[in-house]
Image (cartoon, rainbow, N blue to C red; front, side):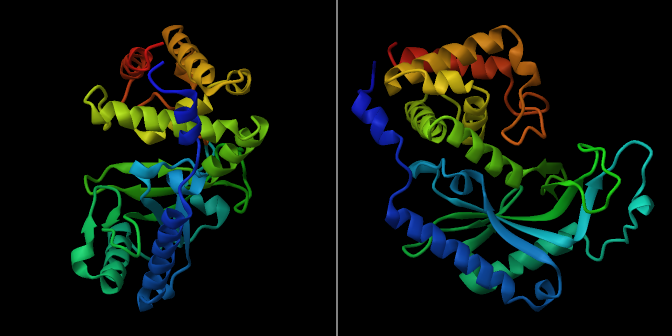
Length: 297
């Protein structure tokens, strides 16, 4: 085994208090920035963290904060077959998405300085300094999925987010559901679920650093979803991290080889993990094969 049990154990730890404080500073500054915009104050929005920081699965190399600024005054929706917005008494939206994104960008630039805020494809990038960490700020509209529960009640929906990238690609996520599912699995596995995710992220990052793995395809989000689809019995069934990592790789590789991955979902279980993604089953199988050899099992 390339890494000692002690090294794997060290990798299970969350961020240090100092890094966590800098992340908290960033979140507070983003909230203040948005509150300082008069046009945004007149809208109903919610600011919350999502991604690895919210899920407590981040490691040092991906310790940037992912903050969603979700507009609720205007929202997108998915309805059961045969239903229309009129059936739910929906009114027309009050702001276009691109205008909303521009308002958020202007608010951030007023707070952080224009040189610290740049456009990303899906998010607005806030550069780090000694006081705050790097941040991805995601302007999004609330997304109401009524179809999942076949709900005819306007207040009974699964809440997600929807945005359009700079390439005008529709992006739908369910970050709050993701967080709750992660908490549940972590409890079921005696808190080993998130520790295993951190170990696997560290391993992936090390492999990226030495040129074995394409980090653009094998993302931290993908790693988290793969461990989500690893049975609880595998995660809690062994006494050492050395053996747990080994058995997780074996399970995932064989499950994908046998086609079980086709129905796998993200942690939210609202979207499929292997449909319309930048990765496919061959990419993941290759990474698992490379990880096995890299770890010298």
